[in-house]
Image 1 (spheres, rainbow, N blue to C red):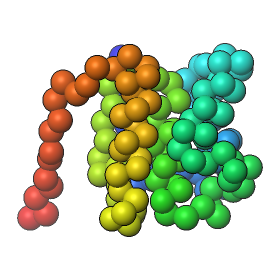
Image 2 (image 1 turned 90 degrees about the vertical axis):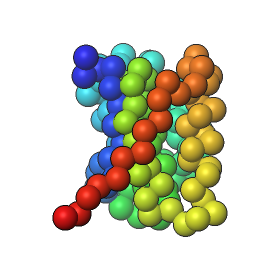
Image 3 (image 1 turned 135 degrees about the horizontal axis):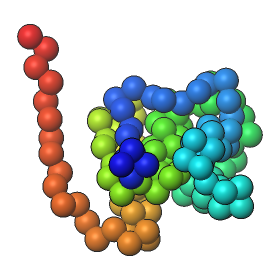
Length: 127
């Protein structure tokens, strides 16, 4: 069941010591993707999320928006059937917030998703 679930948390899961490409390859290895398939998925996600030019740089040098896009891409490496997004635009400026969502929806539609079954907004009570 875990293999069918992808999670993008409120705080980034990006390893800042690895390059963007290495972060995605790590997720592919953890998801047991074969090398050829992993390479195609990794390169496709880097391109889709606008990270191809920075893919060889350590993620610690990325801007906040780039780290967030990498974090979203990492969630999608294994093609999960169920995705939990906890404030996926945290750290992005207001003008940039729509781009990751648009990329995510386009990618999911290409992979055969027909839409959301349920979109739930959960608020945390700090009391």
